Image (cartoon, rainbow, N blue to C red; front, top):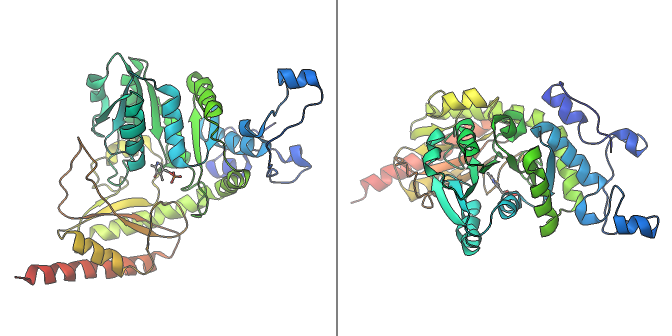
Length: 398
Ligand SMILES: *Cc1c(COP(=O)(O)O)cnc(C)c1O
């Protein structure tokens, strides 16, 4: 299928025109949503050689190809697989590239279900799992072993937003031929292109900004030329294909992702700066803020920031955090992010093993949605008031 060439064009132009070519479908702007298992062959010989564009529903359709081609253009990748969730986008490449006896390095500040997968299923299969400090940078060379096969990074970190020196980690990995995978969900390929920084495989929970409406689960995994064949083989072997309606919804979401992200970025930065000045807030963990310890690396490598960051309350424990959360009226209490609506989540850091930063109070993650900033500020101000007065009551208790 011919995809229109959008090389050299701006990100929003690419988002509007990448993926499918309307001339493939009678001029309709969007590709068809192909519901398919069986594909027919014209004759027995073709059937035996499977020498035709599509062969079976699990192996791809014009709908999945359109989304994969659009993602390839954004990532600069040789190929992209589309899987049923962001978590599957992490587990499938790990299963594809690891075997018993291999050593896997994972950032300690990784998305928790990724850690759970590594600590349970990968360990059971005989993989040696080791966590590294997200701030390790080129120091990761000291952790490399002859059997290190994969390094899994995620930057900025889940919940605490440490920025990793991805180019330094990738350069170290080259010395032992380890495959570098990166969960790039926070930045989207609009704000960070992992393959341009030495990463081999870029992972996305398309559930987040690409889908954008809290109604679809999907993952994408994009590989460079060196790793594509093996990644694709793992995908075919595991049979983890996705439903066509969900795939289509993500392609639809991509068309407006740049516009949505611009607003998420602007609103989140404005609210983060405002929160830095509010009583009751000890710190704002947002890499786009000059106060953030990882700001310089973020500025060097990233071209923008999305709408998710955390705040650290100035003292108080679980009860202050719950008072804050329970007072919010616009922010919903719910997991995931990347949708149009604002969300808040209490952060638990008990899973960390090597990067235990002592925060002065509870950490709360915020996803800034597309609502009006003044309304969101008023909601957060109410929450902070509640957290503070809760503290005072608690302090006054005998
Ligand atoms: C949400 C998320 C995932 C998992 O995505 P799902 O589609 O919810 O399974 C993976 N990695 C990161 C960084 C995420 O934020």
